[in-house]
Image 1 (tube, rainbow, N blue to C red):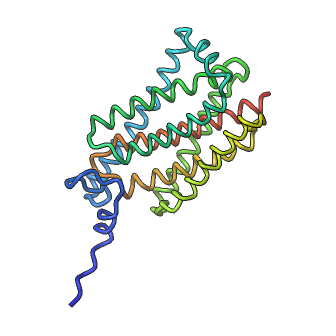
Image 2: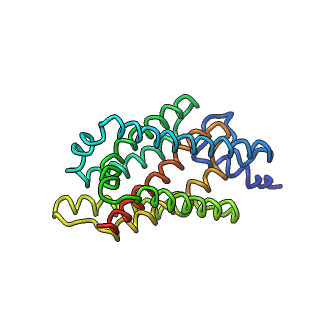
Length: 246
């Protein structure tokens, strides 16, 4: 007689790239109440990261540090764009490899701080030349994130197939950034629109992983991955609003 075929949950656990040790179980295999607690903790930490980001930006602008930071980075826009994507990659990698909750908190805190610095030049320009753009971009990002999250929760579809698409999308974006630096052409609105689409795919992918693959002790890392995708969407939505006001 052949061996019985393992259940789908066991197969997912055995093939789970987010597994964090022998005692880590994917939250998807837990009881309903435990899964709900994991999801609640994940999104509570995501909201906390967003509020921390906003509070730090307000503190920087009120302290007068925004102008020197913006001046230091404004001449290197292409490098800022590249840093935006590379730190997002780093956040995703960290979300997959962090071994303890303490390490996850450290990674989330450092990533929020990096994003605060990266956003300063764009927020400074928006605040000075495009009144209302920040609020409008925040609203559009919130609605986009809520809609994509609803799609992932309602359909329960596994969006892991987006990983390859996202990989090549990020590679092409980096190629475009490097080419613009070498040849001196401007990455305009169409580039920003494409990056918003890529961020939307990342939100679907990350939300699907939260529902299917993250271990029960990785709620902070899951929030970090979601925050990276939300930050990227907000960045490029804001660029579109600024361009529309020029």
